[in-house]
Image (tube, rainbow, N blue to C red):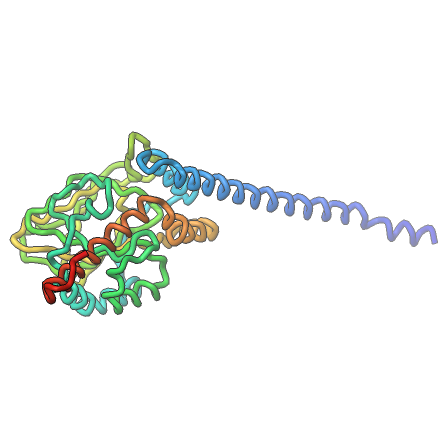
Length: 322
């Protein structure tokens, strides 16, 4: 009986070691989860702070964006040429998308406004860059209702599309070198109308150097770097993605107007699921409550409402404009 007891006791050290290893693994997972929760909590706190700070203090908002971007740990990839099924539904329907644009623009062309007058504070002024804005960080404007096909393509896309507009470059438009504000998206451009022009007069150029930009003297310090200059040329029905936080410029020195579909698409190449999840939440919900975003939606809606009122008045002078 004693021998039997000893035999039963022999495995105990091994059992204890196994239990200790299991406890260490569980502890490691626990600390890892706590770290993720802590980072997410700090990021949300910075966003809430940015939201409540007076809208004139853009520096705080850029700090919040920088905090989000740092948490996302954005990969060092700066441009993508779509192929295969990537954005295929947009390329396949570019003529129909262009037709929707032309139908809308025929009625509301006179109401097309400079991009800077819709999204305030871009610094572009009235340099010929005009836009019809359909979605601003998850919030649709009234214009979206005029584009049923495009709306369906955007909403059914497997990637989160946080921003959508028709970007219009009139003849003579030149945008100086500038940076985008958030690295959690790829900027997508699909050419719809491209005038004949020398390639040196109609292009988008992304410069070599640090990506992430400098805003309000805040270095983004993302560690992302573009190795060489890259020049994109628009061709009708063709598209590309690029990281707009890399310094870039664009110009149209042709004799015609260039129109593209301009989308911000959530990056699909983040390293971890929780980064991807938070990025989508930020783009589709949190950012929609930032005052600069809600102000831009209001401005675009007022522009189109005033334009509709003016047209009703022209059709029937007895109808008051406002």
